[in-house]
Each structure stands twice: as C-alpha cells, then as structure tokens.
Image 1: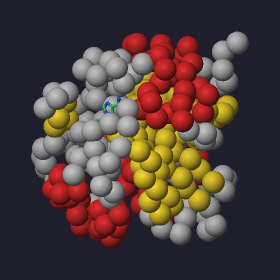
Image 2: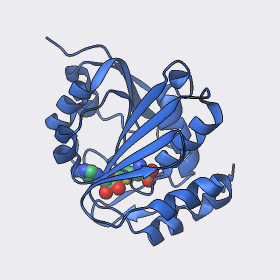
Image 3: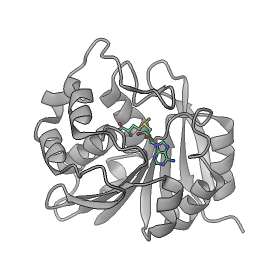
Image 4: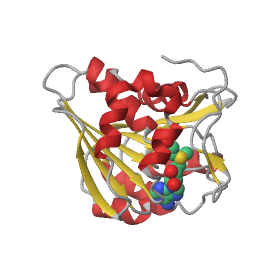
Length: 229
Ligand SMILES: C[S@@+](CC[C@H](N)C(=O)[O-])C[C@H]1O[C@@H](n2cnc3c(N)ncnc32)[C@H](O)[C@@H]1O
C-alpha cells in the first residue's frame, strides 16, 4: 500500500469539506467503511452481498471494497455495490484525485475509469468483474433511495459533514435505510455527530461510537435490529 506522508485531499468548494482524509484517504476508507462494517468477515457466509453508499465522490471507497472482495470472498460469491452521487466528478478529476494510489489500486482504478459513465442523471450499471457490479446513481440520495428495491447488508454513509450538508442527512434518508435493511445490516460513517447517531437509533440501528481515523477521535458504527414499532 502506498503510504504517503501527507498527500492532501481534494475538497468541495460548495460544501467546504474534503472528499477524504488529508492524512491518507485509502487508509481512512479501510478503517471507517471496511473495518467499520466488519468486512471482510460479513461477506464470508453470504453468497450475495450488497453495499449501499451515500456519496460516490472519487470512488475511493468503492475501489477499496471491490479490491478487498476480490481478495477475500469465497469463490462463487457476488458483490453488488449501489453508490449514489448528486454532483458527479469528471473522469479526469477522479483520475487526478486518486493519483496517490495509482500503483496500489492498479487495474481496479483503470477498469473503473474506463467504465465511468458520462455525468448524466440516472442509473448507470457497471460490470466491474465477473463477481462485482456497481449501480452508480447520479441523483440526490433522497430522490434515489425511494426508487430502489434492495437488501442492503452494509451502508457506507459518506456525505459531507452533517453540519455542512444537512439536506442529505434527512429523516427520509434514515427511513429509507430502515426500509432497505434487514436485522444484521451494518452501517459505518466517519461522523460521530449526535444527531446522526440519534437518527440511526430511531430508525432501528443499535449504534456505537468507536475510534475514528487519524485526527478524527470518533466515528459511528451500527447494526440494524429491526424497524421500531
Ligand atoms: C465525502 S464525499 C464522498 C467521498 C467518496 N465516498 C469517495 O470515496 O471519494 C461526499 C460526497 O457526497 C456527495 N453528496 C452530497 N450531498 C449529496 C446528496 N444529497 N445526494 C447524493 N450525494 C451527495 C458529494 O457530492 C460528495 O461527492
């Protein structure tokens, strides 16, 4: 793994927030979203595993999940990734932002860039490999989720900070998460914001505040226990 000393991170002018950690985005992705969702253990005994991500951004989380799946999943298992992005980046910007991990991600990055769709709203289906598909939805997550039927096993909540992007972290988002989850579905997010933890709890997740990545002291993980009556 490339371990750059300080690689910097792309940021959004609109939201005044970064796409991933300034310390090491790939290491952050592994800590927060993979370990936070207990991967790769969770997909060992599921022939089909479904991840749903809020905020595709540069695709770094998708790439790290895809790579880990190819390296650790039992033969014959499938991974479906659904990732939703309201403000898609261009292919050139993604390639530029992920340059620090060009060697580590190798052909995974090349394959994703080759298939990256035009920035047109709607559903884009990418066959990443024989066992991994990506449904990339260019839309607001609050408009996209009600259109989906899925049995989500792991949620990657990676929108910009709730205080800077409150529209995304809406009651509708948490209600849809409950609709698309089953007992045992997991969630991980880099934020430890109290309102997010409360909203997840109200939606039926048992949440825990755990150690965050790098300079972030805390993050949140959770497990769905069922819709509250
Ligand atoms: C922290 S970045 C995500 C980083 C990304 N997961 C990665 O691996 O690079 C947050 C992303 O959420 C997107 N976003 C913000 N509000 C959104 C919304 N309402 N619906 C869908 N995506 C949204 C932003 O455009 C941005 O790409």
